[in-house]
Image (tube, rainbow, N blue to C red):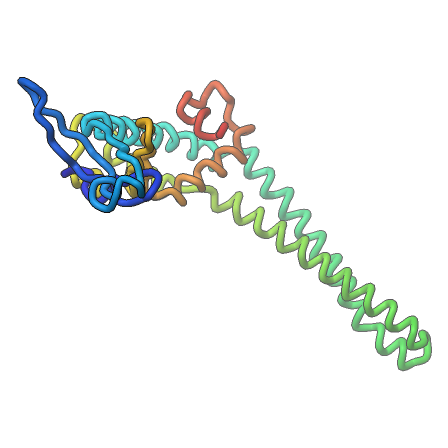
Length: 238
């Protein structure tokens, strides 16, 4: 079947079995938990669900994310080319340069400390107090510099439209009308069915998707809310 190996019981996490049953003039195809069917009714429950319902849900989720990938791409370009981001990068670089100058000052003070001690300008107690103070200050400044440099890299790197989530789902930008094994293998990690009929579709490229969510959330002030489609607004509001 198209979902074989992907569809699993949401509770015991084992595979679901596909079964067919006649119902008068027509037949029904459904999935049932393999643990319940083969290992014992006391180990899990049926989790029965019509195959059409599951496949329709998976198709809807894939189409939704393909549309989302198309909507995100121009928003990324807008954010990456925003003058606001360029100005932010410049401000961070100036702040980083100030910290580097401060670092040089305290490194120089630390280097001059021992000669002052040897010359008798300070005693051993004062030497140890100042030495510890300078070491702590240098460590604090280095930490600030690292934080600033990481922020600069994040701004300048941005998130490319070559992000895996966008690249893979954009290939299916025309509305998919039929679920195929190839599409499922490419885009779906797992499909979990829970007792009561709830379906959870876990897609591939989740790390790339999470990167997009974080990037869009961090830069939402750059893009007017009205410019974001309802799908993207929902994506970053979670």
